[in-house]
Image (cartoon, rainbow, N blue to C red; front, top):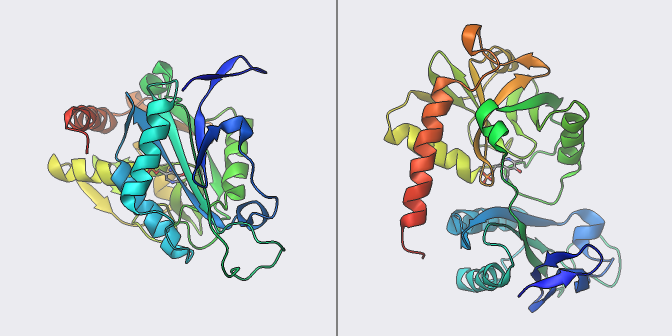
Amino acid sequence: MVRLNHEQGAPEATCYLNGDYLPLSQARISPLDRGFLYADGVYEVMPVFARRPFRLDAHLDRLQHSLAGIRLPNPHCREAWKEIVRRLVDEAPWADQSLYLQVTRGADDKRSMPFPPEVQPTVFAFVAPLVQPSAQQRERGIGAVTVNDIRWGRCDLKTLVLLPNVLAHQSAVDAGCEEAVLIRDGYLSEGASSNIFVVKDGVILAPPKDHRMLPGTTYDVVLELAVRHEARHEIRAIAEAELRSADELWRTSSSKGVLAITTLDGRPVGHGEQAGKPGPVMRQMQTWYAAFFDEYMSEAQP
Ligand code: PMP
């Protein structure tokens, strides 16, 4: 259902909060919510194309992994999640959307760190218009800066603990760039909101899925496509020096797909004629990814 947000004159979507569907501007949570006080919660974000959530099951699997990692029981079975998603997506004023799901450990009546007994989790979900990369970003790539990875030790969980990511993103924006590439102890971990791939001498390099990075749904697709098309690839730790001498750098995320990073800390990525331009392996992967996307979208909706 389309409502106008009268202050901005823009359409407003319905959100879901603890069993209710209501306009986003009317949603209220307690200031004692543990998500607000302690970032004690997890979330997911996925794109919706033509009112079809893209790889919803992969995101619900990761939500389950994140919930288990913070010892919070999943408040909904998969069908219940799908029903919430279906309703929000169907009622939104836009066909292409960004869908956000969040679960926190709920609001106690006091501020106390240990898990509160008998407190219901807070479940929140909303959709917004999908922001896609511009034609220029797809064609020419984006700029990135490197930032010291100061996050905690469980980056495989998609938790609300995002202050380091916020600061990293702001460093990128301050430098006129779109992404921050995080480096921990001399090794690449990932982007502030993406996974990072390196190409060297025609080989696609990806850091292993461990506690230092989020297991990206697009990371999985890219590696599946590399296997399917027999592209040379290696999954291993990537040293900062390899990042800096890469022939190509890519950033992957479900909302933006596969994008080239063409400058790093103000210097062009790559060598010779290709320096500062999206490379040939990237172009090949974008073609495979586009075909995968079309194939996925043409399949019957689950
Ligand atoms: N790493 C981080 C830190 C992210 O925020 C994201 C975006 N969710 C990703 C990686 C990429 O994950 P996905 O491909 O599932 O969007």
